[in-house]
Image (cartoon, rainbow, N blue to C red; front, top):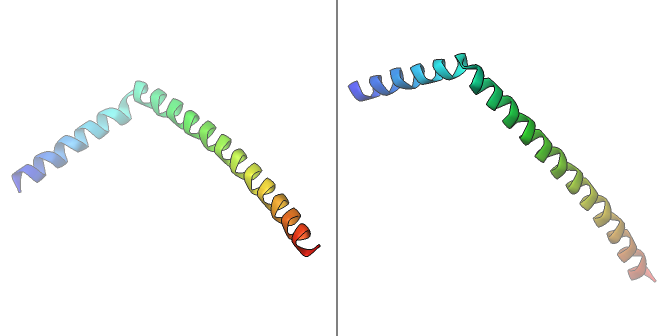
Length: 66
């Protein structure tokens, strides 16, 4: 029980210190920017793949009907 209480206090202390730190906020903003960039690139690649896949599927279905 005592260990859980100490862990809670310690994690609360660390969390409060991080939230009060300008360096942490800069790092978090930069990380968010990187994640957003990667997500946008992945979304674009996924959309392009779906578009090409549908086009190829339509071509294959037309060729199959002939």
